[in-house]
View (cartoon, rainbow, N blue to C red):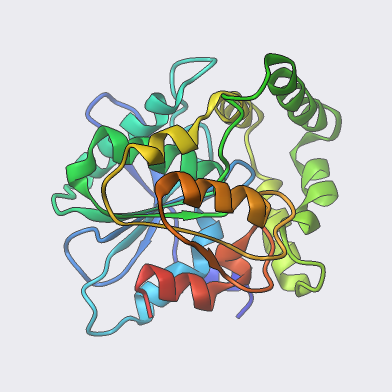
Length: 277
């Protein structure tokens, strides 16, 4: 099945948090306890993890339960309160969501792209709740860049959204999320997800990216960490991902010929890294 066809097997759910906020998410697996938590990137949503959800569903005899959220301000998830949010705002929402799901055991926490910023800070806030941290094509953030560079990056990103809208942005940028030889059904899936971003939530996430300092966060962690990306990623390049790995004190994992949307384009290596095979 194509990714979009397969996604119908994993309908979106919604849970209410203690503070009244809501989080929409998808899940798969037969275990009672949550084992894997998946956080998507800025131009995406929970459906970007469809190949990992499939692997969890097929993992007969393996005690796994995989949950993939829609970040605050995406799909049916309540935005964070701050117009200019910080990483803590999203990290705290991760743990509030998992509290609502009654996740008690330490989890494998997985962040892709901007989701890596959220995952890194969540691990820093509650290290005892993380068995292992996996960062896929991690976006390091621009918090350490010169102010002019940081402001220009944010301005350019938001100008693209304003000029093209979500659907136009998806058409213009979707293929760049994958390697040049990616199959049309993968391009279709990336564009479908990007076309559904909510401008207000995307704007908050872009402001978070502008302030992020992932390398600083991972340098403080003492848990098992894996950093991986495809060697055809033109968005978070192998060099930038290697820098995150170096900050974490670990080796970079090469996922092969895959672009930025590696959970979708390189499901075999990604699922093996996550222990879902």
